[in-house]
Image 1 (cartoon, chains in turn purple, orange):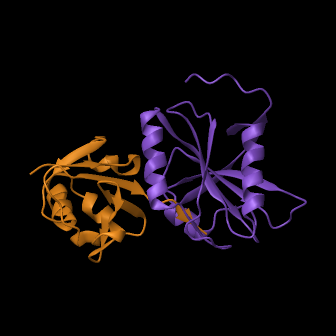
Image 2 (spheres, chains in turn brown, red; image 1 turned 45 degrees about the vertical axis):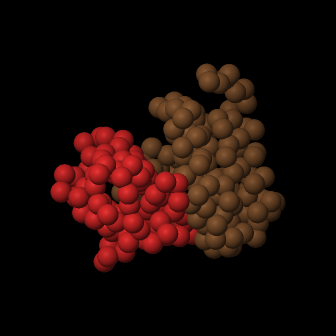
Length: 142
Length: 90
């Protein structure tokens, strides 16, 4: 199950909405082993495309190093689909390389009805999980 | 010659869990060959048909090797190589 604070949940949806009709992408970092997504890091979609996304490689290196320095890991890796359902595409599955991450998909195809779903993707196997939106963030530990 | 190579979580199964390993080579291609001798299976996850796999990003001193010379990128003693999984999809 993905537990995510409402402010982070809302910020992901807002990012997806503002980048529409291109796909939006980003990371939510959290302390290593905590499974708590607390620090939202919107990333540049280097593809600037309505059908593909790719983290800008130089930005990714900077962000990954910063997470390392802060003893964080990518707890959530998110991106949006702009005209299809919030379910991992074949390409999403091919690229999925963080077995501990929650892969969040947001669909912006219907602006009035947000789809926000979370998946584990391990060795090509997709497993959907429940999303619990929490209202009272616990204070961060660092 | 010693070059430090940082390994991402997903590839640490080839390095007995080590976050970084050291190797040698005058080019990235040679370095990967050298690493393969001690960490069998690793090179196959980085290189396919003589090209860098699209699923990985490789950096030499913080520069993406796709904008340098790819696998022919020259290396010198003390260079730092970082491997990250590319984050992409459709």
